[in-house]
Image 1 (cartoon, one colour):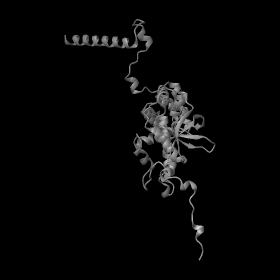
Image 2 (spheres, rainbow, N blue to C red):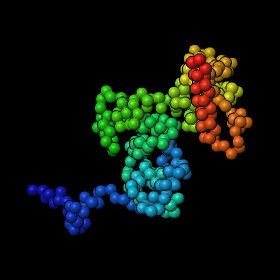
Image 3 (tube, rainbow, N blue to C red):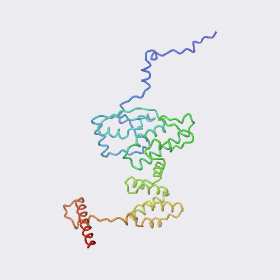
Image 4 (tube, rainbow, N blue to C red):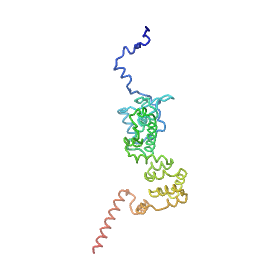
Length: 313
């Protein structure tokens, strides 16, 4: 009879002298204090970290109370860690004079990390259109890649389950502050050249016209910049729609652009603008703009009452 001793597995000393609770604790995620110098931004991170008033408030809060929510990071092949969630917290720590930041280290693949990175930022109210646009695109691309894997791999590390027959954009919209159609419109903005996208962020071009302009070819968008500069105007929605139609028909020349951009907009026809130089002729230098506005309103009310009395005679 053959001996079965070779099939016997001997427990290690560590196994013999550790409890089940301690073994479970060893497998749980732990918060670590990681040097800021070892933390690197997420590749192609779409959210801008600005030293604005909000950041100053964050830094002051960290000085007084520390970091409430640990960052989420993943190990880098080159050494150190890549920040998945916590870019603003890291900057706040720097401004607060700290050298480390609490973080949870997770082993995440690119797509799972992208989804967590986007989800941790999307709920912020102060996002620029460009930030929301590229965030939605990055997450949707990651979800599509996950959906294309074998079914047993379709459940990723952050709990998304890709059911057969459901579109990734529908799943994205379920946990997003925007509808499916609005998400698709935001993603269209990623087709704009940087100069036009900057103008959207700066509110020089409205969102709806910007979506229509995203259908123009890149060379046409460059040409549009010149036309806008020449006419000192930005496209209205109707103008942007006509530019898009001309482009699709192959008739969008520079001359056509200038003709469209030189049109007076309806809003311009309905608007009366009084320049500061004109108003200053009639008011003392000590008057503030608010005082000038109040005085103009009072004079207009007097003028209206006088006209009504004359009409009643």
